[in-house]
Length: 392
Image (cartoon, rainbow, N blue to C red):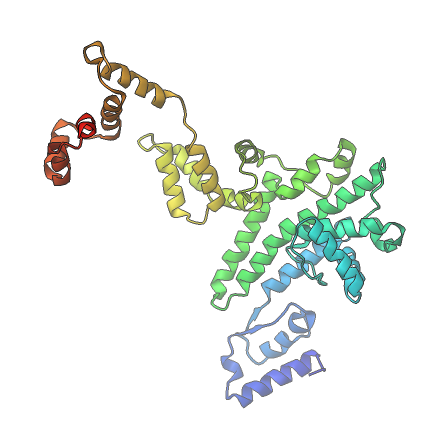
């Protein structure tokens, strides 16, 4: 119905209910987007329906609220990402030759080509490098509104470097934070989501946003770009973007261990926030459990910590000292004594393997040997005497 007034929508709803044999008085709630025509204070669809059913519950759209919040937040930012996206889209939308030239830049930087679409996607930052290179190569032919986003790369022109990095920095920040909102919208759009679960979904989003503010976390890629800024440019951005501080310790671990290419730093931050309370409880536990046992309990309770697990596996593979090797040397010295100085290397090696790898006491080992028939047969055979086999 093109007539979207409150009265028209209300009459259509009542007509459809009547056609379906449903009673308006048994209608529990009215759900719609948050437009004033639906939930206006004085005259709206909800008010008209409530006049006939006083127990009607208004249900707004939380996903729509998140969209509005994102839009209003972007309006407060000095960087006009909407203009950038729309202008880039218009530049390629109806020009096949430009698309072919853009694909060449994608191939040059070894990035999979994705069609330039009108709306911002979670892949915007990934494709920004070839798109930036394309527009920068146009020089004076670059559309004027896009020149400040993609200035021509000229040697010795620091301002261009600043603007270019500024574009990447904002796109990296938007990619990180809007991905969080996007995932929340997907959670709200699940078919099996109950109304009582909506609060917990939004509360989770709120906690994540507050945690980012507390930790001053703006995304790993954005933080790396900020680190490359000179002090004067950093002070310019400080009013709009927050610098990474609290998360730097874990970042240093990834950098020092060489796991940078195997760990997604943004996902690692989410995992870190997920187990923060569990880590605090583990630290406060008594010392009956080892650190590895505590971590194993955390990973067992949180099986999705793939990035944290990669770091843990790498760190636990690093020996704490050279004690293991020194212990082998001590055992070797005791075994290869003056009284047994004619032992061959193979004999000493065999004894050390038994001493190091078997944890049973004498009685347990005795019972183990008696129960292993294959081992007893090997002991009785002549195969263990290599010098006899050579003579044969």
